[in-house]
Structure formats: C-alpha cells, structure tokens
Length: 368
Image (cartoon, rainbow, N blue to C red; front, side, top):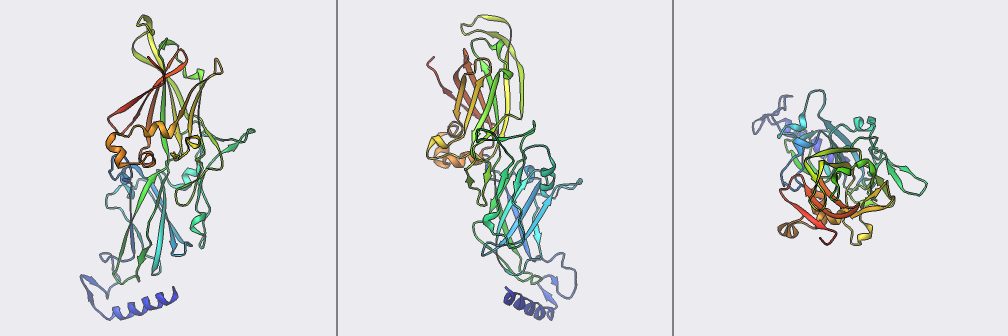
C-alpha cells in the first residue's frame, strides 16, 4: 500500500507540471468541476416493482469500506436531516476523497433515520456490531433487541412501535480506487435489499361477524431471524417471538349476516394486527420456517397456524415462478396482507395479498 501511495505522489508531482488536463486547470486549487476519488451511488430496485426507490425510501446510509483482505479501513454516513435531504436527489452520490489507492469492498447498512437516532428510540432496535479500523468484515453483524424468557425463547419487545427499516448491500467485486487528484475517478454502485417486513393481519368470523374482537385473540410470529450476518445470511440460533405493535377493531360497512345469510341486525366487526419482522427465510425443511400462530384467549385453543414463508410465496404468479425463487420473492416483497376468515372459531380460509401487486390469492382450509 505504501508503495502505491509513493507512486501516486510521484505521479501527482509530474502532473503538476502540466497546465491543462482536459478542461481541468491543474495549476489551481479549484477542483470543483474535476471528478476524482470514489463516487458511490446506491440503488434499491430489488423489489417487486423492479424500480429504484432509494431516493424515496432511504433516509440514511452507512458505508463500510474494507480492504481486499476484509479489514475495515473507514466508515462513512450520510443522512437526510435538519431540513436537508441529500439522499432524496436522483443525482445523489457519496463522494469519498480520502482513501489511498487500492482495491476495496463496500458494505452498506441503511435505514430511514440516522443510526444514532434509531438507538435512541423506544422500539426494538437493530444493533450493529462496533467496528473499528482493522475489524474483519465477518464481524459486521446486526442483532435485533430481544429479551430471553424462562422457556428459552426470546421476546422482541416493540413497545408498541414498528421496527426501523433495515437495508443491506454488499458489492460482489472489489472496486479500484486510483491516486487522488489525478482526475481518474472511480464509480461504484451498491444494491440494497430490504430486510424488514410489514405484515398486516385481519381476522373475520363468518358465523357471527358481530362477535369479532381482536382482544379475544393472542397473535404471535415465531422465527429465528433476529441475527443478521455480514453477508445478509442469518444466524438462526435464537428462536424469537414477535407480537403486534398495533391491534384494533373496525366496523364493517354493510349489515352482518350469519352463515346461512340471515341478517343479524348490526354491522360486523373486523380485527386488525400489524407486525414488523426481520428477514423471512424459505427453508428446504418447512419445519424451520417462521410461523404465525393465533390462539383464542376465550377457549385457550390454537385457531390458526400458518407457515409464513410458504403462504406468502404462494403469491407468485405463473410468470413469477420462472422469474423468482421463493426466497427472492420474499426478499423483494415487504408489505404483506393476510385476511384470515374463521368459521365457528376455526380457520376457514385465508386471502393473501401484497400492497404493490394488483392480485391476491385465496387459500382454503376447509371443504365448503
């Protein structure tokens, strides 16, 4: 590395003798119009819209720069704050000018707010590993706050708030950075994957819709997805439990009828629950997949148990099945809707949909 720097300085001295290079005046200190250093752009088009939504969705990005051996060199962060929104500009690029020449790997973690603000919130947090110069890239993991229970499971305590959105990105190949002030810029792009998922659940009772009350049900998601490793894979050691960060009831807009179509004299009710979880994984063994479990508080009986990766990936159309694997579909989607219909307190069928798509799918759990 020192040899490269020395060569760089020698080249710089020789170039200072040249008065012009293209349109850039080498004899002045004003290099505003002369590209140099590393320009990093970020894109978030790994979604079902297949559109770059980085400028609209991401409010803060932290870039970790590692050398070829995987050791941390520098960390950079840029955010929308104090009335300024640099990341919202389609022309945004993080301009880095203090890296010595060499080859580097780039890893990004992004959110909607600066990381320091995320740590100060009352919600469950994605806590990043402390990284200092020389830290190995494999030590950069992210762990979701959790509290161990007596049964060995871990509760994700959300305090009635959704999770902060988390994106992850890693360049596949190292990028070459050249000597500064030689007007040989490097341009690199980091593609982001959204790891946090929003799942809205509605509950309806077909026999007597007027009797639905979300407070009569305990809703939980069981998974092993709280520990995200440097390459966005998961350490699935710890089993965690998610509870809704919001629950509420609404009235239907039409008069309710019973299972035989007889009017009940009042409108029906719909129960709602909002979850946010970490990354959903579709496993070869379905027993390892995350589960949505709903239990009646009145009877103590389990009324719903759904394999989330399996049921959500069924939204793929015939065309999608050739375009995406189950896992890629889950990684691209992030805002899911499950409409669960009970009959006499038992699961009847489920309608699944996703906010960005114009279709839904009904999955039957009983013979009508």
